[in-house]
Length: 176
Image 1 (tube, rainbow, N blue to C red):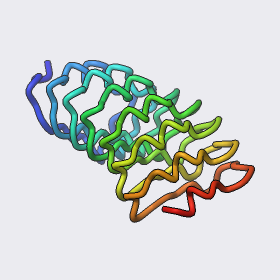
Image 2: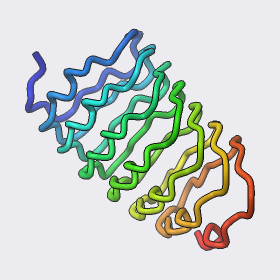
Image 3: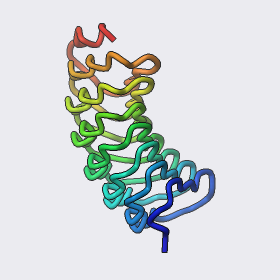
């Protein structure tokens, strides 16, 4: 049984396979980071990650073979003020509009997946974002929401390359 009081849990750069156990949701008092990067997990991200409401710094599932959609319950992590990273997986479906509730988030990595549909305008609510918005190499379509022009603190990467966007580029994007 996992301790409910652990702050930092890192399993990066191993060869773990199959599913990430849903029991990690029991770490509801975890305040720092939960890192599963660079493994071989190949199932869905458990919806129980939405129970990690005290998480402040980083939630990372990047560089695995995770499938399915990004759980909407991640939007319940309103205390997350660092990084959400699910980059380089096989995640599908729409980017959940609930990510717009993560208003303290500084870094968002969703690139190199198979996210489809449009970018939800609610991502424009992530106005604390300072360095990275990575949505590259997906199958996103439609126009880029003008609300993304609200990332006035963004100083490093606004990365939307290798998608299927169309229409006019919003003038608000030019104000970044």
